[in-house]
Image (cartoon, rainbow, N blue to C red; front, top):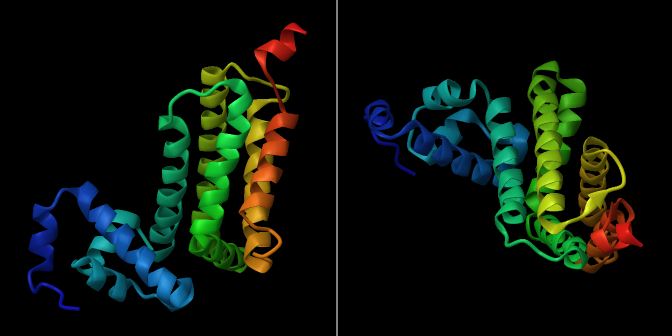
Length: 211
């Protein structure tokens, strides 16, 4: 792959948001092919058509770029939930479960990379400084999504939205790991059933409240 000789000048002419997205896409490819540890900043920059300085100026570090890759994929999942038309209360659990199941089974690489980086963060303080804030941001975003979906559908949460977000976040992570370990048994159907069961357990519809 050829890197432009004037990569710095090219980067200056491109909007910062586009530079970030191109580097995130390049990093996703590199991490998918080589894993987090083996992928290098030089290779990622080359794939994106920039110098490694663009990586550091936009993300601060390789860890920061990796966190951005995971957050980008999580954002896509949340956008599907929030941008979809409002659904009746009795359809919400199945819809959310379907989105989560598709994300887990169709994007296994995210699950593998997440496990790899979590293991690294447990041993590496630098990785932990990126990992902790990322997970916190994801939980907060999940709480926001839960609030929005519940209001639009007329569902009432039986527990605090923050607790609901934490439980759903943990269940999703666990299902992702179990799917990677045993995809035949923990398949899309099993994942949908688990997510739907949780949502039904922690919500009440308007008709249920009246009764």
